Length: 171
Image (tube, rainbow, N blue to C red; front, side):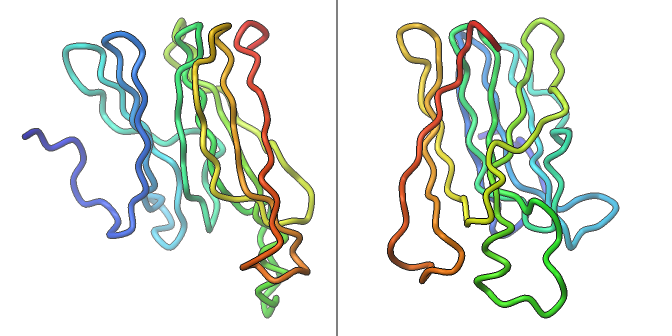
């Protein structure tokens, strides 16, 4: 029984992946300078000890969540999450707000031990959420699936499951 992180959100969402003796854990936490906003933090077990948790660059938004992490066949860790593309206008309806929710991603390079600056995978004015990574596939690639929902539709029915393939060799 080992404590990895203290003082976490009651609704903390967690994802873990392994590559040999290396473990990567990502989770949702409040931003240090704006606790009403969230970010994705990471910590890595190198086979001997866990690193101090740090934020993944570009994962900070007022509504960052549902992280998923997986190692590709090169030993690099890809993390995806749900976030606002930009802040919805004050007084926006639920459907309007849903149209701002996109999928973001960042890659941890096993050679440098650093995350890239990250970017949005989707930017389509639809609700994109619940990302889930799987892999590595036999060639080292990863597969991402997520739910896309047209913002003007009922958010409970009529969605689509989408997929995207991470090319590990191309990085």
